[in-house]
Image 1 (tube, one colour):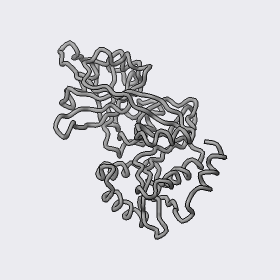
Image 2 (cartoon, one colour; image 1 turned 45 degrees about the vertical axis):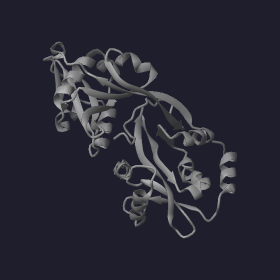
Image 3 (cartoon, helix red, strand yellow; image 1 turned 120 degrees about the vertical axis):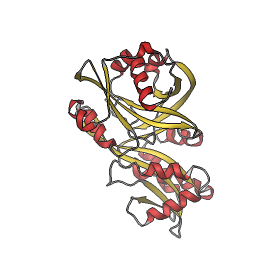
Image 4 (cartoon, helix red, strand yellow; image 1 turned 45 degrees about the horizontal axis):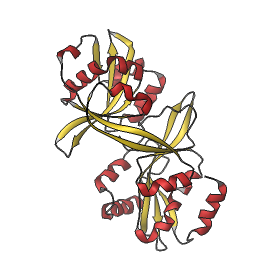
Amino acid sequence: MTNTLLTKLEKKSNINIKVLPIFNKDKKRDSLEIYVKNQKFLKAEEVLRIFKINFNQDQPIAYALLDNEEKIVGFLGTIFSFQPIKEKFVEHCYLHSWVVNEQFRLEAFKLILPIIKKNIFISTYFPIKTLEGLYKKLGFEEIQFFSKIIFLLPSFKFSTNNLNLIEDNNYYEKYLKEKDKIFLKDHLKTETRKIFIHFNEDLFNNILIVVKEKKFKNVISYLEVIYISDQKIFKIHKKKILFELSKKFKTLFFKFNYFEKDKEIFKSFYEIKNSRKKIFYLNKPLDFKINFLYSELL
């Protein structure tokens, strides 16, 4: 977004409508929770669950829009983090749950301005149609990805004695690559499960997979795969890995989010559902390898 557009937006705004960052320990945190429970656009329990994902305690969990009586009339949820990219850490903000009362919609853009002014890496996944145009005007890059649910046909030929699954991070952490040690540390308190897999008793020949147990309509269990540390290793052993995960989590259904370049990996599975979705990025680092680790998927 150009500085000219930023200036125009600010000049058009109502000076009586303000934006306030909301931190977990703020007094306004309770007011935000009440607002979330009363709004009708999103599932309140899901938004409140996302608020618990906080990788950087020094940054807000949301920005709230306040009217001239200091009453919350909208909010934009945020997940701040420092992501390891190449040799450095890059500050990142993931955007979710953007809701504003109808009579204040013209002021909704104010919620994202403080984040854009930080000049940091920003991302958001599968926004609603009405927000896509705004993100494009603000200079966000659009990237498509796919969300696929597959069914694993069980077969004893997938079973193997040379593949080991371990969930005790105190045991396997020292064998991980440096970036995966950071990912692991950041995500220890999230609702995900971290599965360390190694082959032929060689602990350095490994792959880290981050998954989350979910249900279709609270009935059928499935496993969403959030992160795969090494796509090449996964491609070679994918059926054996999924077979072992299937036994461990007692499900035959898996969900993957992937990009066009990775589609060949999933062609050999029986597909239940496949949908195309969008990611929007601003200030995306050149060396960033797209992953879903610091988002609402957790």
